[in-house]
Length: 104
Image (cartoon, rainbow, N blue to C red):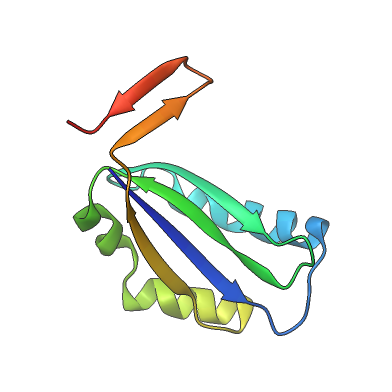
């Protein structure tokens, strides 16, 4: 599994409620995306950085998401470019389902 973290520094801080409204407007775009297991939207405490943490089946699945169109949509929505970092995620602890999941 692969975890990606996307972040973008906002030109001006937003409130939690503004972020919630924006995030809810884009959340349906991520439903049913091939290889995407979970997405968690994030906002810094001071409201100056937003982004997402994604859990993917594979790096190829993740890379298929972060197309130029995705980058343009982020730029149009937030006015800045996103930074994308990739992390290996060989083990996942899920306390909701009470499972420990390994990617092998």
